[in-house]
Length: 174
Image 1 (cartoon, rainbow, N blue to C red):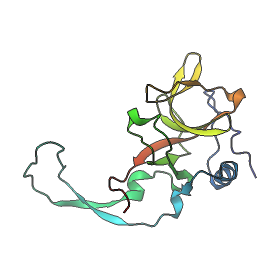
Image 2: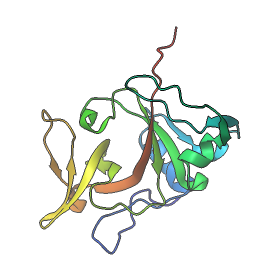
Image 3: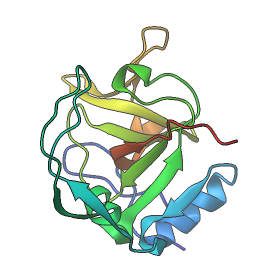
C-alpha cells in the first residue's frame, strides 16, 4: 500500500496522492474520522427553477422549471478523487463552515493560495485556509480565537485535499 502523505509538489506544498489506495491508508491512519467516497453515490436529478429566491422582501417573479439538477454533477468534479468529511469545531466559522457541516473534498485539485484545505499537521487532520506567504505555507483559521499554523513539511504537514463545497442541513434530525 502506498504511503498516504508522501508526494511533494513543485510549489513546496506536500500533497497527498489522490485515489482509493491513499484514502484506504488515510482511513486506517484516522479510524475515528468519517470519510465517504463520492463515486459510490447514486444519481438523482432534482428540479432546478430559473428564478432566484430573494433573502429579503419576496418578489412575485415568474417561477418556471429551468432544467434538472444532479447534485453529484454540481458538487463533484472528480468523483474518483472526491470525498466527504464531517467538520468538528468552530475554527472556520468565519468562512461559513460550522461544527457538523459536511465538506466536499477534491483530492485531485492542486491547492492554491487562500483555498480551504484539509491538511495533516503533526499526525492530526485539520480544515484551514492555506496561505502561501514569503516564509512558506501557513494554515489560517477563519476565527479570531484560533492561531495560524506555519505549515512545516518536516514536522508532518501535508495537504490532503481542497474543500470545494459545504453541505449543511438546516433542519435538525428529529
